[in-house]
Length: 418
Image (cartoon, rainbow, N blue to C red; front, side, top):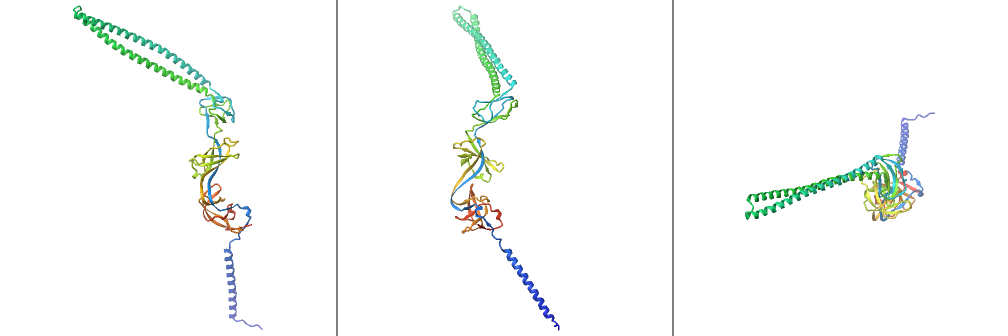
């Protein structure tokens, strides 16, 4: 027989089911929240795949490094000084040359004719100078002769006037005759003074005319020398002792004044031109010591120039070489240069990590004492060098740090080392 259940019993059953459901939901939420707060498991990484360094305290040498080339200290670019056509190339690039070595020969018939014409003009002017000198000397001599004649007449008239004066005292000569003689003597005296002045003026005129003519001759001589020098410049010479590096011309080519004909450099006197990153060049000063690696030897040097301009993110630094150049050193040879900035005493330092800038903060993995795991720490960096960097905060002496690139594990703060 069926027993009828009361409504109270049904309500209790539904309440129990709702309670169980809420309890289950709460458990699921608690488990989910707990799992979400769990850190991901630390990945396992081979220890040998990392570059590990130990933090040290002691002296630190700050250096910067850059690539560059060897360039000659003395380079001569030879331009065309006049128009001409290349007739012959005497020396090829790479050959050793002396100061008077002829590199190439050019021709210019118009210039050669102008030089001959200038020489003839000089000879004609010199002949005119000789003729003028003879003519002026003749005129001057005539002037002197006339002056001498007037002076002689003056002395004669003066003597006659003096004699008649004595005779007039004795009554032997009339007063009128004496006055006529004295007047004649005074007239000749005036003419004598005028002839002397004319003689001085004639001498000055002679000197002025000769000076003007000689100046004209000297001008023509200068023009002739210029033309002859231009003709000689058609035989292009090295000008310095060294090696012919470039000769960008061809036989038959017409050259205009100012066109580059050749480049000659002295290979015995070389310097290094280094390209230093602009972020590392701020502390470079003239006089700092440097070393240049030619891949065939290392030579010491010193900084002699720092380019004030930045080109393509680099600064050009010139290093004069003080030591003997290694064998095989030649212009345009690629080199590796290192410049010594300063020596720091008793600083905390380590090898330079793969990431992180000077005076910046970087996250690095520090090995735990057992060496089986590494934990990420924040490290404040200070001054840096080529392969070392100063530690300002975050590490202590003896800590072991992973310097390799760990960007693949940026999502983890801990690594297990195998």
